[in-house]
Each structure stands twice: as structure tokens, then as C-alpha cells.
Length: 372
Image (cartoon, rainbow, N blue to C red; front, side, top):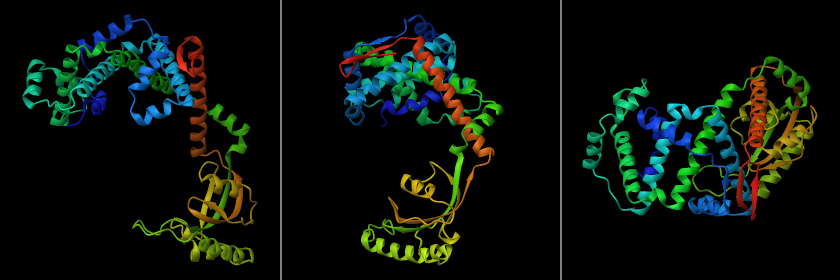
């Protein structure tokens, strides 16, 4: 049986919990904002993490990153409240489902061998006959058939286990109580980020001005290459080619290319790159950030007509010939790239303002506190 924590994706469906959502809205609206986490709180959060994540976040750098992430989430959650996002039924419903999921997961951790019977699930829906009707009413694009038995059962199991967790007092356990207190702030942060994405616009004039002032960022080269692979030829467990033998072969082809033989013909004969081999190694125009670092650095260091030395990457050895250089035109692809860059810059500036507006303290990072 799936653990309740794996059913968090139900959040995306349960967006119309009626009076329950209104209760969540009022309860969270009345709660004072979380502005301080102690070193003990940070340790409690670390203890509740999976081992793979805890190993990193227990390091000095990891603790600093965790403190900064929490600080940003708490500040942005306050801004989300100020903008009224907590008043949205969808947000409140997601917060309630998250709470149910946390409690259900905690109960499952205490009772790992527990099985929830079909009879218990059916009893839940007899007691709460409107549960799935709320889902359908809030999601008119869904049919009743779309809410299959698996979804129905998982939702019923979550609710049942969360109720049992409350009866056992798990919501008062320090680790669970802290999760119930801090995790909603991350949901509010995610909604605020979505809101900022929707509200942040970039004008045509801003795009044009950025392009004119940063043309060097849009430099492109057109290159051909010949790849001599040092990877296994097939995914059948065969060992990779002997590296020095591959290097010697590449050096001989490089000698022939520099002696004036047709580069495209050499690529068609020798290259191990199936994507460009039949095109004579032609990679067309590409900008920075499109190729692996070693390949990019070598290509952009060449002038048209020049041939590189052997360039080693994780793929093998390359011979690169640059045929042209240019500044990318302000076409749709370039416009989209600039628009994304400027939008992210504006959003980051907004986040910086939010961090200054809401002072947050997180203690325990390197034995000190992390303040906004």
C-alpha cells in the first residue's frame, strides 16, 4: 500500500473543501506570523528529513542554505498574507490537505504495519458523503469517472489516519507541530511566486534595450566537429574503447584536417556523433550555455576557418572547426530568452524588497543566527 506522504499530489485536485477551507483561512489569518526559529527548531527540522537530505543540510554550508531558504519562505509568506492570498479557497484547501498528509504520514511512521480496510474507507465516505462532490464542484473539467477508485481510496485513507493521529496527540509532538507550523509557509511562498510571475511584465522596449546593451551575450558560432567517443559503443556492458588508442586515431585525423583535407568528409567518415555525422559534423549556430563547458570554451576561442587542438569532454575527443561567428538576431527565441532573464531579475528584486520588509531570524546556522 502506498504511504500517505506519497499522495500529496492530491493537493492539486482537492481545491473546494467548503466550510473546512473557510475554517483554515480564519485559523491561519488569526495566527501571528512566524518570524523566529530557534536553533532547537532547526535541529528538529533536520531530524525529520530523509537521510540523503539531512546529510547535506547538516554541513555548515547546508545549514546556511537551509536557514536562508526558511528565512525567505517566512518573509514571502507574510507578503502573501498581506496580498490576501490566504483568502483564496484553493490556497486554504491546499494548506488543509497538507496538514492531513503530515498527520497521516506521522501516524503511518508510528504504525508501519497498519492496514486500512476497504470497510473503513467506505464508512468514511458514508459519514462524509459530500467529500468527493466538493472535488467535482471545484473542478468542473473533471468527470466523476476521472476520480477513480485509487484517488478515492487514498483520500479516504489520508483523512482516516490524520484523524487517528490527532486522537493520539501526534499534532502536539514537537517535530510534527513544527512541521504543521512551518510547512504552510512554504505553500504560501509558492503561491506568491506564482503571483509574482503572473504580475511581472516585460515590455518590448525593455527587451530591445537589453539586447542593444548586452549584445556580447548573444554571440554565436557555427561549427563542425568530429567526435571520437570514449564511451561504450552499446549499452550491453561492453567496456569503453581504450582511451589512448582513441587519442592516437583522433590525432591522425586532426593532422589530416590541418593538412587541408575536407573537414566535412572527414566527419562523415570518422565521427561517432550520430546527430551530426551525416551532416559533415555541422552543429549550426549555437550560443553560450548550449554545449558542455570544455567544448564551448574551445569553440568560442576560434576564429572562422580555424581548427582546434583535440578537446576532451565526457563524450570523448573532439576536433572543432569554426566556420562563422555572429550576434544572434533579435528573433522570437532571443526575445523569449531576454524576457525570461528580465522577468527573473524583476522577481528577484521584489523578493529582496520583501526580505527587507519582514525581518526573520533563524538561529543555528554555524552556531549563529540568520537575519534578513
